[in-house]
Image 1 (spheres, rainbow, N blue to C red):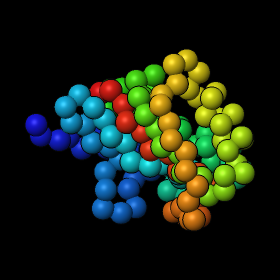
Image 2 (cartoon, rainbow, N blue to C red):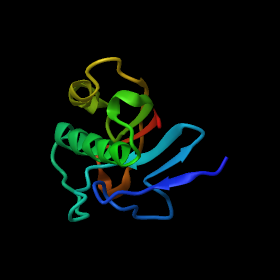
Image 3 (spheres, one colour):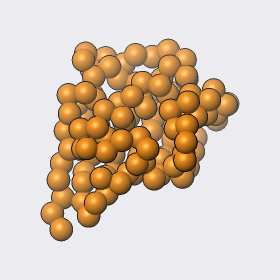
Length: 126
């Protein structure tokens, strides 16, 4: 089955050789998102809750461009710069995925692009 590249101006343009998302066999594979403003391409910074909110808004824009939505997300991976941020990140995450939250892995990493505090990737039904 051929793969389809998903692209939207509603989320930050890739800063490397990757796509915002790929659709294949009825599934969407979304690249990780950090707290970049899609209009300016600038990193928004802020605390972990603000960065989590922006990353999830970016994911939502890619999902919508693909004709999907957050309620069709089946799995996420959350990358945290500091596992001490798990609680506040989780609060913001829970407000985004209110009903039937997807499966999730959360891992601590040494460093993220733009020195972000959080990056989130997703797999969803197309």
